[in-house]
Amino acid sequence: MAGVTETSRGGFSNKLGFILAAAGSAVGLGNIWKFPFEVSDGGGGAFVVMYLAFCFMLCFPVMMAEIAIGRNTNKNAVGAFTAQGNKPWSAVGKLGVVTGIFILSFYNIVAGWALGFAIEMFAGNFSLGQNFGEFVGNWQLNLLFSSIFMIVTVVIVSRGISGGIEKASKILMPSLLVLILALMSYSLTQDGALDGVKYYLIPDFSEVTFETAYGAMGQAFFSLSLGMGALITYGSYVGKKDNMVHATFMILLTDVGIAFIAGLMMFAFIFSQGLDPSNGGAGLIFTVLPGAFESIGPVMGRIIGGSFFVLLSFAALTSTVALLEVPVAYVVDEFEVRRSRTVWIVGLVIFLFGIPSMLGNGTVAFFTEFITYSSGKTVSFMDFVENLASDTFMPLGGLLISFYTAWVWRGDNFKKEIENGNPNFGNSLLGKYTIFALKYLAPIILGSITVITILLKFF
Ligand code: PFF
Image (cartoon, rainbow, N blue to C red; front, side, top):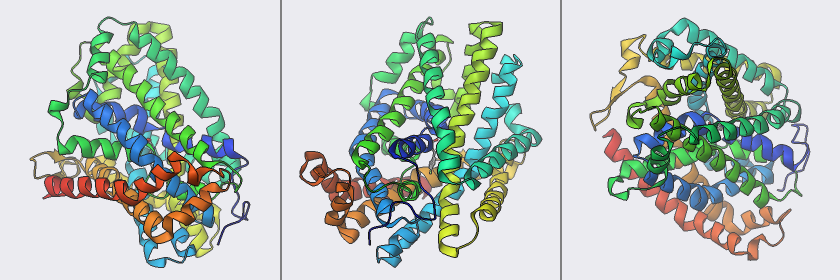
């Protein structure tokens, strides 16, 4: 059943290529755009602690499981389950494909905002932060930027694994890290930054509710691109001899590290500008950062602000590429059609599905006030799709993948797959913990949080 290292599907050229591409998929708008506003929605430090606990204790084992399934079968998220002789479970992969389509439909629009902001920052239009509502309500502009984004994504994915996805990640990831570290250092020198750091790092558990845990869990899955088969797909392009424990740690640390630094930078800026973190919502970084760049000075502010949003767009690009690769790999593998044509068609369908999200930021009332939850909160079409995909489908996918790996594919087979490239895994403490977590912890914890919150939120 074990797959071969290189097939006609192509593959990563080496382990570093895989790590960078998978880290590129993980690091994106989720770390820099979503994480800070989720932290402020979740009340600060306590959310951060829960997020970190989810990442290391539950997401790590789920990530190993996904990569192992992919490498074992050399198949896409749907075909992998069938290849292991468990066809009914391919429904989990199908849920992943749908989740990827949902996420890319709105992610592409936010990525378009980043692109638009890059241009405006270079032009010195720092007042854009105050006019964010107008900016997102301008559908023509959004249509333009998001089509550019989707076209670039399609072009990269159509070039395949090592030529497109891997090459792009190798250049973009390190540049983002350098710029964000520099900005974090600058933000910490601002007056009032310390209050932001305290808000971010000192947890107040008295405010924690089920919804906070649900949000932290969804954020961990979203940020690590987990629970929807993206890593089954990427894992299917990995060499048999590569050490997957090491690779998983590198991906996890890079992703959590960048989110953590981005959070520190954002809260230092928010408090130094005397703003209220709880008012930001999805516009948080777009409303706060232009003012921060302005404070750097007229010339440097433009350069740094413009470069920041360019790199944010690049970070988003390595994620949109992974998001598109999931449905594309499925269609190409299962229906044996040409990759080059499939990519364009799938890209177009997802783009069209994103249009209601684009119009739901003030342009069309129906999509702007799309649904009211039982808590009384009314959200837009885009927020609804985001809540459904990242907070519900992803952890649900993670739950099913854990259960499948431990009980259906079986822990021993999983262990054997990981031992290719890491012979001591089975006997190590980490190996034992990973299997225990897949067997019991993940199904119980993810299951109960998902069920309780769905009941509380949607009914
Ligand atoms: N992890 C990405 C982010 O944090 O921006 C989002 C994402 C990318 C989710 C790829 C899922 C995926 F397959």
